[in-house]
Image: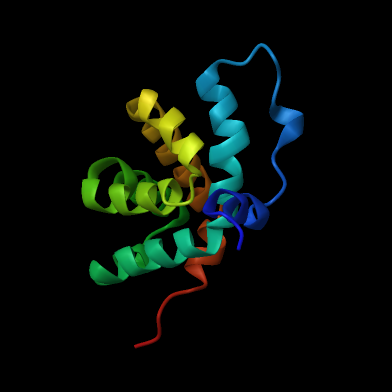
Length: 136
């Protein structure tokens, strides 16, 4: 039976090796070698979580202009700590034990990186999200 760590590493997409350079800070290295591959792997789940979030607020998101949709995404992640924590937990839950131990050394800064990457990913999917309006 495979260990949890090797199973997690097996299911992840290829690490983003071309963005890893020796002069990077430890946070940048962690972001590029751990966070980005996990967030990319979790993309569909992150989109589903956002759609569920917007559904809780009467699907206001779908009535907004593109510019306001971007602001809505930014505000959802920046101002709703419950939603932000759900997104963060989707990422942290896929850390290996070693990655989790490294994460705990600077969790606050890494949480900001997680939120920023997820925000940019959702914003880049605004058109796709707009087409996924639930039918009444």
